[in-house]
Length: 169
Image 1 (cartoon, rainbow, N blue to C red):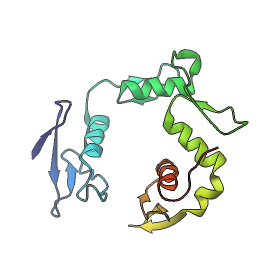
Image 2 (image 1 turned 90 degrees about the vertical axis):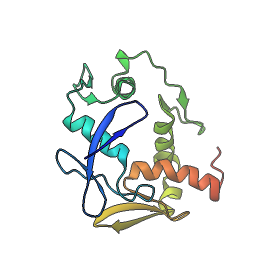
Image 3 (image 1 turned 180 degrees about the vertical axis):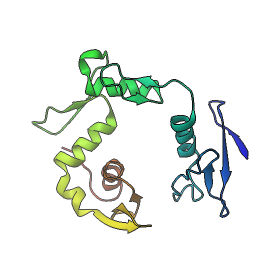
Image 4 (image 1 turned 90 degrees about the horizontal axis):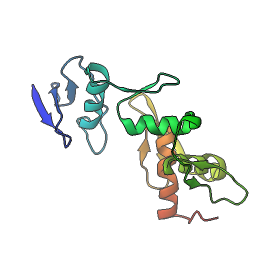
């Protein structure tokens, strides 16, 4: 059994399988390997342990009862899903002429632009591939794989600007 101390001074335990991959010491959950963490992402494992095995109190939405590990995530949820309860201001505005979309996070604005304004361009640079029997979203520009369309949309706008075309309006 190995103990790891994160930056927050929280300690979590894990074990390794016969190939050296990280595993939860309580239920044998294995975080998915990535290029950056081929033996499993320690942050994913820590999140799993906190969510599934910790007695720590979660931050619960008073309206819909959805729970969050982090207070910031709850505050963002309330501001976007229950704005009448929030003091947060939607400070990210879409710069496409004629669009009045606004968001409390830059990430949501990026997703909006990828889906609403650059959908054709994004689709032309997307290749869906199967990796270990799971669907991945591959960027044709740089060959980066994402395991969700949301992660791909976050990546693609930056990649297109860096490698191909400036996305200005």
